[in-house]
Image: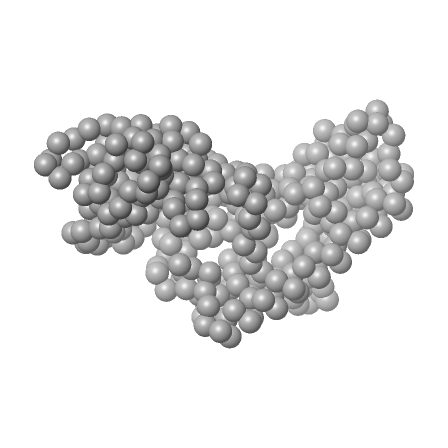
Length: 350
């Protein structure tokens, strides 16, 4: 069942991406030769106007085939349009993938879901850490952080990762019930074995409850949470350079495994997971790598920098072709390690 869920999830996200390209192309009067769900060979297709709408046998993606992506000589081709129009068409898919999570998070918040409530306690404080400098001590209880109630350890970790390098305000309750507000600045690159603030947590009074919020609260919460996830993405990328750590990569096989594990937790967690994958897809496609939308945007921006002087269509096409095969090779390598990890009983979830 989870394989079916994974395929449906993937199709919906890719379809959203391609609808963005399709709508922008129509808006800019770029000829769309084919709008396909899945990858060829074609299983079924129908032509409406100048566009073939197809369903293909490999259900792991989709595509929008535009006329003349590199060739400006064809009438109605993408390459014949203005630089702003091409930027819009090439980025529209990623923009829609980044906006979709607003709706998905709203739905996830409105659907009844299980929430953990616990008292988050400070078990240990590392020497020479931001927590020690701020006066946090073992036995303290964390009540609020940056104005947000701390319902569980996840809330505390979330706010800390969201504000790396920034001063945050924490409301602490000491063992004698005295409450105080302190300021802490989480570190980008803490010593090995320490967290960003230098505390080890414990918890008491662990309970669970089924909760949901009304739509008038879910809508703004969806906007806020989507923005915060983008900030977390930015912080993660910055952390690769600050900490000199490699990103953790996952291919289709690992994502399918994760989908199965999240599916067991219910519809609300599955929608949140879908939102995260959608943001991943949007951001990934904007990377300046040949074969991706971001790689094509690089050539458009180069043309702008060169005051209208284009890279030859043959050379640009060759670069994107090499990039495409490099991406396929990367996916195969990642998939190999994903399979090895699954065989050994591993999981990407903590």
